Length: 161
Image 1 (cartoon, rainbow, N blue to C red):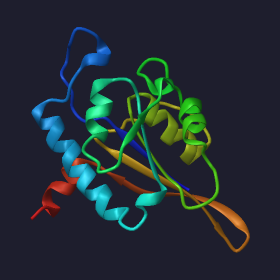
Image 2 (cartoon, rainbow, N blue to C red):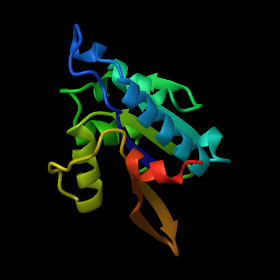
Image 3 (cartoon, rainbow, N blue to C red):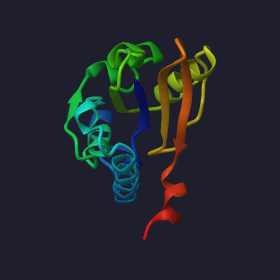
């Protein structure tokens, strides 16, 4: 199983409600850049991809840059979600070739990455539109967990044509 934790891209500072905050023009570019990279990395695995988002507009707009449909899960909402919610919603660490992409919020994304990498939930900074890609795999009869990639949109800027 692959679990991709994707922090939403840059959003407006304020709106009528927190859930209504939209992406800024810069945020739309960040989301598009990261989505292009993810699409290339996941080529051939489209049938196994699930995209989950919160009810927040910024989370949905970030995921909308992907070519796959997203499912809203209120357990991922800002202020409510925890690392445990991410594990529950994603069904981590199920076996198989499933890919779950969660477009979510800080501090939840950072806390989940920390928990999965170190076994301890703690504050971990994740840049806007940044991706932490974790993988569960079986090798020689044992289960391994690894950090496959940690990418931010600014790292991809130099790779564009």
